[in-house]
Every structure is written in structure tokens, then in C-alpha cells.
Length: 290
Ligand SMILES: Cc1ncc(C[n+]2csc(CCOP(=O)(O)OP(=O)(O)O)c2C)c(N)n1
Ligand code: SF4
Image (tube, rainbow, N blue to C red; front, side, top):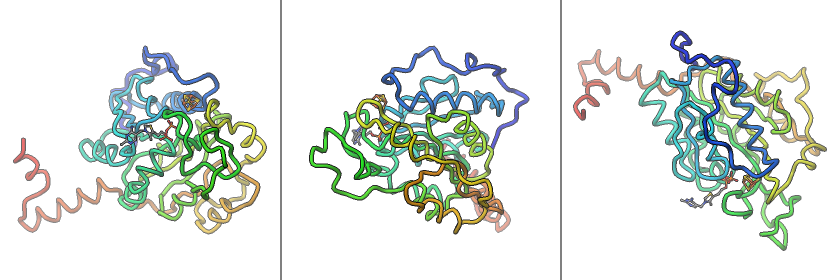
């Protein structure tokens, strides 16, 4: 959902969105690309910064909200999605963007991903995937593929890696895309589409860690745009794409054809039904606590 622009704080350039805090990520870190694409997407969408919140987990990626002028919530490791869900439910008029690392979203927080999807919370989740635990100095993460070499794993990766796109498709996320920090224009476009999407949208943002798992070369050799003829409404075709061996596709894998009811609307409908039956509404119930 995008809040109305009539009260918009005038954002014309990146300077209007950038906070006074300079990013302290390492030189070349992919997270710079994600931040830049977020700035650009916000400008394109003319988002009202007063009505926009970026919720983050803990990790190098978790620092992102502090570099913007919109509201931010730097929460607990692995809890970015429940926190963002709470923010959206407390004030459905907000644009809610959740950001966090692959460790945050697929290890400690892995249990929250399917539930945000099945509730279809109207927000955008950007997983900043560097296939390593960056902040804690280079341990393997759920997306560390056997092909990657980490100093912390001198005998190599012994487990299969998770595929965030496959998970999102299996969880029936209503918008699923993949972007790469080295392709900022495309990342910006995908962020715009994801934020405009009504319902839970997911962008797998490949964001290499230049210090502990520098995967730029690996991805530059493998990435290719999703073919133009791909029908993003076709879930089976989307599943075929992520399974393609030797290629890492970028673009929109899947977007549900018919808008699914999002969580805020579901709860509003429930409240109205209860009121009609003479039962106490959720709003009245909450009022009793304030
Ligand atoms: C409950 C809890 N467990 C563990 C940690 C330690 N910790 C901080 S960040 C992190 C992992 C960071 O990796 P990721 O989420 O992929 O983010 P990145 O730093 O790579 O952006 C861990 C395990 C913590 N802060 N809180
Ligand atoms: S440790 Fe890696 S992920 Fe963290 S800021 Fe440095 S390059 Fe980025």
C-alpha cells in the first residue's frame, strides 16, 4: 500500500532522503547498492517519508534504516517480520519495508517467513543476502552454497544451501523477485514494483560481502535477466526458472494474478462482522486498554 502523497515531505533527490549518518559498511559492500536502490525507489514513488517505516533485523544489513530520514525500527535478530507485521497492524496507513540478512531471515528468523506470507501482510520484505554472517565476522549462513569458500569453514561447506526464491514460491508469497546489488537500476525497478504490490512482497537482494564472502565474480558470471516471455502469473514457470542449473535469474519470478486479501483487510472484515452480530469489535476491545 502506498500512502497518499498530498502531505508528502518534498523528496526530489537523494539528499532529501539521506540521513545525517554516513554508512559504515566496508568498501564495496553490496548493502550500499541496496540502500541506493531504496533511495531511488522512494524518489520514484514519491513516498511520504512521514508515513514510511523501515524495520530491520540485526546484522550489517540491519543498519540500513538509520541512513534514511524515514522512520526506522532496528529490532531483534531474526524478528524483522513479526515486528514489521506489528507496525503495519498498529497503523495500516504506513508503508512498511522490512530489511534483514539471510541469517536473520532464514536461520534464527526462518520460522517467520511462511507466516508473514500466509497472513499476506501488506508490506515489502527485502532479504539482503550475502550468503554469510557479516556482522559476526564470517560464519556460514543458510545460503552459503558449497561452492563458496569461507575462512570460518576451512573444510568447506558441509550442508546444502537454502534457496530464498524457492521458499518464497512454496510459501505462496504474492510477489517474488530477485535483484543484484551490482545492477542498481533493475534493483530500483523491482523495489518499486514490490512496494506498489498490494500484499506481502519479497525481493531476494543478492548483496555480496566483500570481506567475508566476496561473491561478485561468481554472480556476475551467472546472473541473467528472466526472459521477457516469462509469464509472472504462472507459478509453475516461476518454479522452473529457479531450478535452472548454472544460471541465477534476476527479475520478477511471480506475481499473483488476483489480489489476495491482506491481513489488515481480513481483520477489518472480521471486526465488522463481529460488530454486526453485536459482539465487541477489536477496536473497542483495544480501546479498553488505553
Ligand atoms: C538472538 C541473537 N542471536 C545471535 C546474535 C548474534 N548475531 C548478530 S548478527 C548475526 C548474524 C548476521 O548475519 P545476517 O543476518 O545474514 O546479516 P549480515 O550481518 O550478514 O547482514 C548473529 C548471529 C544476536 N545478535 N541475537
Ligand atoms: S562485513 Fe561484509 S556485509 Fe558487513 S559491512 Fe563489511 S562487507 Fe558488508
